[in-house]
Length: 76
Image (cartoon, rainbow, N blue to C red; front, side, top):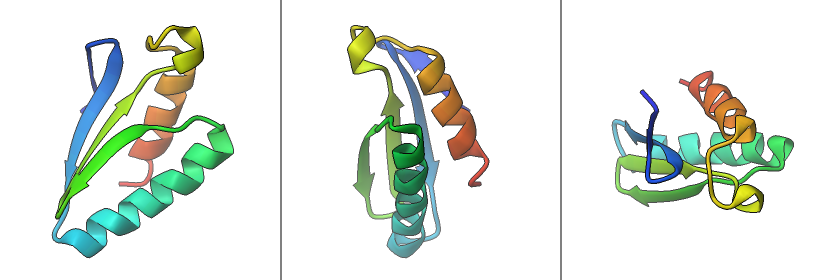
């Protein structure tokens, strides 16, 4: 579940292994390109963490972030 904290939408994802985590990140990257909106994220082995906020709006959460979060959810 996405949560709003520190002026960003945040969610952590856990996968079976690194390959699944990396495949997920690849799919997110393709969607982010289509939305022209790119996440801040980290990956350590099977865990991916994503933060979404809009830099052009002063690093706050906007509709662009919410739409991207919804699109990411559809990948699961």
